[in-house]
Amino acid sequence: MSATQAIIAQDERFGAHNYHPLPVVIAEAEGVIVRDPDGREYMDFLSAYSAVNQGHRHPRIIAALKAQADRCTLTSRAFHNDRMGEFLQKLCAYTGYEMALPMNTGAEAVETAIKLARRWGVEVKGVENGNQEIIVCADNFHGRTSTIISFSTDPDARVNYGPYAPGFKIIPFDDVPALEQAIGPNTVAFLVEPIQGEAGVAVPSAGYLQAVRRVCSEHNVLMIADEVQTGFCRTGRKFACDHEGVRPDVMTLGKALGGGVFPVSAVVADQPYMGVFTPGTHGSTFGGNPLGAAVAIAALEVLEEEKLAERAERLGQTFRAAMARIECPRIRQVRGKGLLNAVVFDDQFEAWDVCLALRDAGILAKQTHGNIIRFAPPLVITEEQLQSALRIIRDVFQEIA
Ligand SMILES: *Cc1c(COP(=O)(O)O)cnc(C)c1O
Image (tube, rainbow, N blue to C red):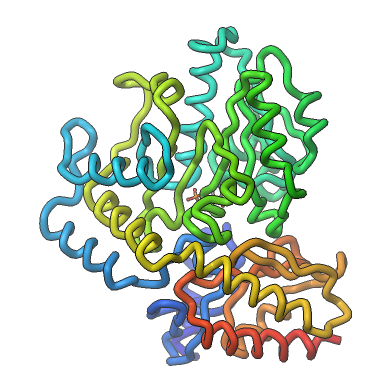
C-alpha cells in the first residue's frame, strides 16, 4: 500500500464521512505547488476554496505567524491584546469601513452579520423583536451552522437537520423584481454573495449589484454582501462588489483573510450598524486573538504589495480566453471573474472522472454540482505556471468524448 492509500484508509476509518474528497493526499505545499507523500507534484487549482489566495506558506505570513507564536497567542477578549487593534485598523483601511468585528470562520462572520441585522432591525428600524426577516438567494452558500443551513436550498446541506430557523425568505439569485416583491415592513436585510461560488461560480447579470444596492437603500434594508469566497482579490478586485462600484452596508469576510494559515474572519460595517453590539451581546473566545491578528495583517500586506487583484484580473482573462478555445463538445460554458472561474459541462455530465484525470496529469480541481469544475489557483501563480496548467487542462478536456 502506498503512503497515499494508507492515509486515505485511516481517514475513512476514523473520520466522520462528512466529505467526499478527491483521492489525493497533500503533505507539503509551497506557493501553487503541493506534493503528496509519495513524492508526486500537483498545481493546486482550488486554493482551499480561495483561502489560499496568497499562495501556500507565503514566507511573509509564515514569518508573522512564527514571530507572534514566540510572543503571545491567546488572551481572550476579557483583556486587550497588542495586535487586534492594529489588525482591525488595517482591515478598516483596506475595506473602507469604520469598524470591524473579528471572528474565526466564515460561518461565524455570517452569523454575526445576521445578528447585527436583526438587532439593527429592532433598535433602529423599529421592527418588533421576533418578526425580523432576512431575504436570501436560492443556491446560496453561507456556511454550515444550524441557522445558516435553515435557509440553504441544497438538500444535502439541510435534510433532517430540523427544526429550521425561521425568519428567512428565499428568492432567485440575479432577480431584482423578486427582491422588490419580497421586501416587506419587517425586512431587515438582504444577504447575497456577489458571485455564488459554491453554486458553481454563478456570475449575476451586469448591473445586478447596483440594482440591489438601490433597492436596499430605497426600502431601508441592509445590503449584506458575503465576500468570504469572492473577497481579497480573488475576482480581480479587492472585493467582487467593486466590479460595480457598490458599497454594501455590511460585508462578511473570511478565508483569505487568514492567508491560508490560520482561521480569521470578520464583519465590517460603519458605526451606525456595528454600534448595535454592546458589551456581552456577542463574542468569541478566539476571535481577535493575537496570532490570527498578526497573520491577517501580513495576509493583507501581501495582497496589497504583490498587487494580487491586478494579477488575478489579468491572468483570469488569459485563463478564460484559453478555455474558450478548447474543443470539447461537452463544455457548455466558461464563466467567472478574475481567478474565480468555472467550466460548465452538459447537465448530465459527471465531472468526477475528469477531476481524477486532471489529478493524474498534475492539476488539483474539484467539481461542484456534478457537472461544473471550479478553477481557482492561488493568485501568486506565475504566467508560466498558468500556461503549463492550461496545456494540461486542454489535453485532458480534449480526451473527453
Ligand atoms: C466558505 C464560505 C463560507 C463559510 O466559511 P467557513 O470558514 O467554511 O465557515 C461562507 N460564505 C461563503 C460565500 C463561503 O464561500
